[in-house]
Length: 175
Image 1: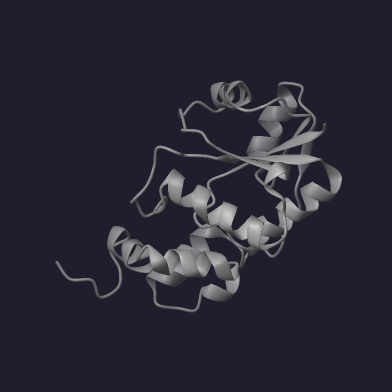
Image 2: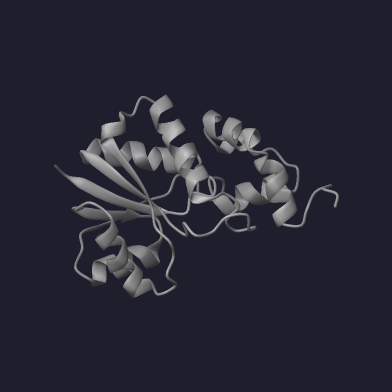
């Protein structure tokens, strides 16, 4: 069984993330998706809770024909110590053969501790980027085309648009 670790915050899970998971599943039997900053939620940088992100990702993957036995969804809090976080993550997940990330810092740290790493070439990072998507939501711009249809529906079902506008201090929300 060959597994790859794919850490991220997924705020929200977008089409770029989906492409990465699909790519990794062509190369590995399973992907262990670590939902980072799991202790965060209802903030501008992390508007969705870990449980919401788990539901969001699970809903997308199932609806894109990815069998539940091919992926793990594991929330991990951020302990704000990058070197310690890498080994902390490894202690909280099933055994993995490699770590994949588009974040050069994450790749460098896992490489430094001797892990096989995969530096992901991100798909259109100027568009498929959680910060940009949240900013577009905040400013009332089109954003649904950047996330899988299931994510857009999920965000709307939990009043996520209003939440982002409120926690980021934008939009027309009222006290």
